[in-house]
Length: 390
Ligand SMILES: *Cc1c(COP(=O)(O)O)cnc(C)c1O
Image (cartoon, rainbow, N blue to C red; front, side, top):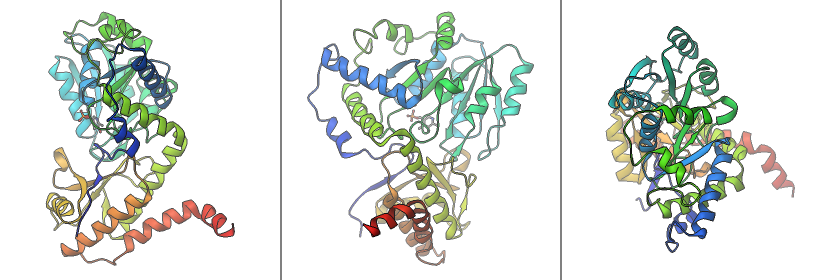
């Protein structure tokens, strides 16, 4: 019955047609002024999306590569760092810091709960040796979005490093206003590009730390990147095609407008949450508008989540993400960050309804779709009646 593949995972995400086409442009040398124009446009537009005037560095790597560059470029072995973690990606930061010999203070919170910024504050004020604090904005493994503004206030006095992999272009994220020293993100989530491109913003304060850092590094050395920043965007061959795709994607985003993008994601998130709850499923994280990049859902006890997802893909061509880490086989994660509209949501809800039924879970057919449509009508009510009048 299936003909198409539909990708609803929180990275990699679908790419719009013009972004696909951008990859097919003739390659140009990165040292030409033509590429220089594209590169500087990407950087200045990224600054708009990241709400920052800080320097931007781009890497040909997945987001973990740019994250690794942060540890290599800011610290020396033995430095004390606080990582506040409430999910798989927070725990990954702990492992990354430990891999480079940092002394990691782990502040672990229950998966699905928020980071308690009061505890961040007291840990930092009790230990003057702590140099930096790290947290994940949208914890993609649980769909929980942390209060980064509060985190930065709590970590006032130390460097603040934020993983915005799945929150940039979805959630309110004010790098300079909130005082984020280093923000890391990449192309394959809400930025609507294929994987392989990552970027960071670096404050002056972080740059000073970089100059004191004694960690070994080469490919990801920010100083080498900065030396070259005016002649060529990178000391190494940049991912030229991906940068052209990112350029196209960001132009599209700016045309839609950041506020409209955030509002669209809020509506998509509401539709998914009310849809799955209408057929008796449970959300893993809170039913809150801030959790708008991805929705983690607990299936009925007797349905193994991973088998369900396999069937969803095989039967209907719909790819939804599994749980990871301690949530493996316990939840499904419906991704809706980036190139998604309301009909993508109606599709996935409808397919989930059909498949749940086949797994022996009986519910009122159509309830999830109707609940999502109701959210949409509430949102669009005024617009629809205007159309009917004209
Ligand atoms: C996707 C993601 C990453 C990065 O992953 P890569 O696979 O290295 O691109 C990091 N942190 C969070 C929160 C993510 O969602």
